[in-house]
Image 1: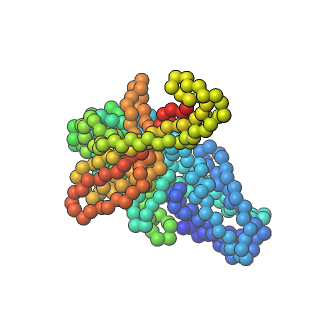
Image 2 (image 1 turned 90 degrees about the vertical axis):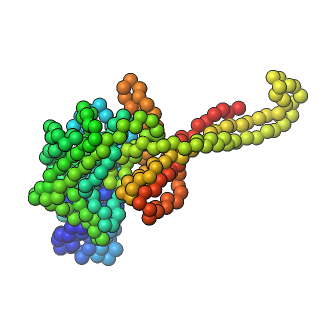
Image 3 (image 1 turned 135 degrees about the vertical axis):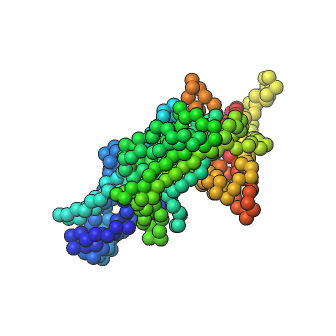
Length: 357
């Protein structure tokens, strides 16, 4: 966190980088005000949220993470996989925050990513991904400023991808033809950081002169259950799973029978003297498996179970990929100490209302 003196008081406020689901804390202490108002503005849209609090003696505390979360539309993003180069993932936003007291104010800016970091994790470091070449795919990358990403396809240099500024980008692979590996390399800079370490006081230590390299190994499989999710680092992830045996559960909802006190009359086999109401619903679950993955890949896939935004690929319509929102069942995941192990989870398809009588 950053610390400054303000109007005879001390204010502690977030670093330049924050995550929407980590605490985003503002402390003001050392002077007694009647009240303090914090205003959060989304720089992109100009929309604002505001909260006013009374002080407790000479201190006041704000956690503005819930306000920041409300500016994201992570579940409504529509990625255009027909584009090439770098596109805005809409999973990073710049905010301007103002702390107002009577006759004075203090302001600061911060860039917030969708997601949350664990203590000790590195954000935007080197990664190895699997590119499922026959399905829609993108690579998430954060850049602290404008620059260019070096691209290597099967060991041959290609035209770089330009980045227009600070953002969480989707690097699109449209137009790239690789047989083995595609690599993206973002050089480090001495003037800004694109890689961060998370420390114990909720700050993010920017690592200048630290490059990011992402290697994508090509996979030519053409069948399976293809899932897309947003991980805790605010980036789109993809994996092609092997499907298991589908389970279909039928349930009754609101069934009742009653005597309507009418004459007995059978029409089409139904007893007209009895009122009836019945609704049937279907709940389908499908176990999926990624067989024999290593430890890093297991951790990568485990974030599927922690994500509230999971989509299943359901083919193309007019050349545009179609996605169906699903959920992953809550269960225990045991990471074994063996070198390779299967990752298995159960996806829950949307409830289907069958018939109502």
